[in-house]
Image 1 (cartoon, rainbow, N blue to C red):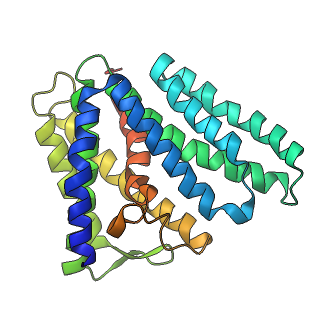
Image 2 (image 1 turned 90 degrees about the vertical axis):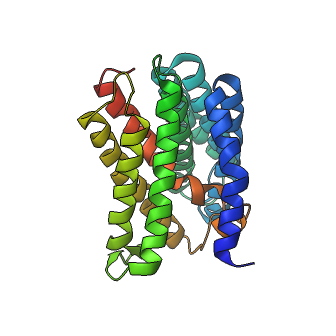
Length: 265
């Protein structure tokens, strides 16, 4: 099976289910968030094993972050995440591993923050009182459109490297095609929205178009530092869960705070 066919089959199987659960919202979406956080942290702590992260503290902090977002909003999500620091420090002291505390606790907190906060902000977007469902679906579809357009444009027309030191496969041609697709999808999806129409939807699309590749490059930088090709293999040609979520994790946070600035939250 070719990598392209494998990617297509994964998308055909997973994307409709994800969109359905996002559309349903509530505890259905929270259940999906739990699965994403647990699998994402499993992959992250797997490749950062040489840094000796305090895995139990990371899982607890990541899950507390999304639980806080679901039950009490952004303040509770922050509180859940901050619990990672204290728990990681205490458990690091108990375990008495040889890795320095700065490295061990730092890797633990990075995983909980990166994955937990990213997923938590998707929950926060979905819980926006008016059109939260539409906003959450728009973010996911915009990121998917950007990734797809960038992938094909990069393969067919890519000549100029975007960030060769971090991810040699990314090109400016792919970035421009992905950005155009992202802005277009956002504008079309929110054309009749109550609060993000016209120029506001174009700005939102532009913000997502910038955040998505930054998230992708961040993940590539982590993998390069740790000499890993992918975070995992659970999604066949797509790699691991984090290889698919990397763009969403940054985009959800950026989109939520722009929507908050618009007064949507």
